[in-house]
Every structure is written in structure tokens, then in C-alpha cells.
Amino acid sequence: MHTRNNTVIAITCFVIILAIAHSMHSQAANKSLQQYTRIVSLSPSITAMIQDLGCEHLLVGVTQYHPPLSRAIPIVGTITNPNSEAIIALQPDIILHSKEDSPTQKIDMLHHAGLRLYALPSADSFETICSNYRTIAGILNIKDYAIHKLSEYKKKRHALIHKINRSALILLSANPFIAVSRHSYISNIFADAGIDNTLYYSKTRYPIVQLEYLLAQKVGMIIVLNNDTLPDTIEKTKNIVHMPYDELYLYTPRHYCDSLQHVVTVLYGK
Image 1 (cartoon, rainbow, N blue to C red):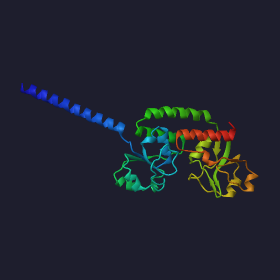
Image 2: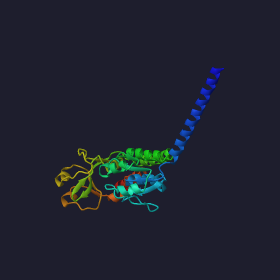
Image 3: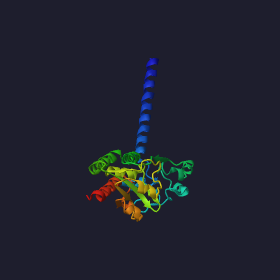
Image 4: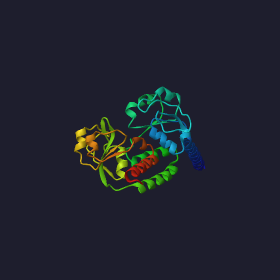
């Protein structure tokens, strides 16, 4: 009889423990679904992705040079110099930033303030942009919605892709000559449009090159991402295509597709 009572007590305790564990799990799940209602974005690209996912209403702070917003959101400084005091005063649930910008963003001060931060990898291709998009959607608990949108963006990109059919050098500036290397997302956009960027040796994204280098390159064209006038020696010997940079955006998978559409239109007239 004594043994039976002990068994009953043990079973009862086990049931109670399971009930408590279930309750705690349910509370944690509910909290997960409701958390991050106050987000600070320290990157225009992250801001744009949050917008594209329909969650701009969760933003309580953004940096300057942000994408167009549907409402006034406090500015917390620039990408390279965010205002830590202003960010702390906003009491965000989470601060999203890019690893590319972290070295100049005084992240340590925000860590010491006990704030939650999440760093996304630098985006230099369509694939990494999509990966960051899915990560943000996971933080916002809307993964299924993101997967649906990404499916549409990938279809659009696939329809625009051209096989490599010509070589080119790409310039950001003509004074000084600042080129685009294959390490830049811009180079990836042009590769999708069928352009082989011949500047592959540089370890930096935007190296400075000399006039002699431009003249020596045996390329079909030089693409200039602004309206700068090039020296006559280049204008007379190379096929120059001007394509202002303000038509090219990284930001979201949608922006990447829109930029690719623009490049294809300029190069092929369609």
C-alpha cells in the first residue's frame, strides 16, 4: 500500500512538472511571436528589407540615407557614426546592423548597455541578399511570407539573366578613376546581365586605377556609373556606356532585380 501511494505521488508530481514545462514553453512561444516590436536598424539595406516584408511599423529608429519611409521615424545618426545615446533612449528590443559597418559603429557601447544586437553578413551577391532577407524574416516570425516573396524575385531574376557575351571595365568615377572589382555586388549585377568584368585581380571592391591601365585594357566597352566625361584618349579608343549609379540599388532582392532590369534595358534596349 505504501509503495502504491509513493507511485501515485511520483506520477502526480511528474504530471505537474509536465504541465509547468508545457506552460513555460507556451509562454516562451507566445513571447517569441510577440517580441521585437521596437527595432532599430543601423543599415539602409536592413531598413529596406524590413519595409519590403511589411514590417516598417516595427521600426523605432533608422540611420540617415534610409529608403523612403511612410512615416516619420527617429534618425539615430549615420551608418558609420550612429548615436548610441539616442539608440539607448529608444529602448529597442533589438538592433540590427551589418558586419560590414560594425567596425565604425561603436557597437561595444550598445552591448555594455545590455541591448540585444544582431549582425547580418555583408551582402555582395543576389544569394547573400536573399539569405539576409530570410534571416530578417525569421527574426520577424514571417518566414513563410519571405519564402513566397523570394520565389517571385528569383523568377524575375532568372527571366532577366543573360549569358556572358561581352567584356567590360566598370567605373564608379572618372575623377579619379575608381573602378568596380569582382568583389562588388555591382559586378554581380553586370555578370547577370552578361558582362564579364575584367577587373578580377583587385582585393578591394573599388580600387583606384590609372589612365594608362584603362588604355591598355582590351575590352569591348567601359561602363561609367555616372555622367563624368572621360579623357579624349579613352573616348576615341573605347566604347563608352554611361549608366548613372542612382539607378542601381542593393537593398533588397526586389531592388537587385530592378537594378538588373535597368542594366539589361540600357545594354540591350529591352
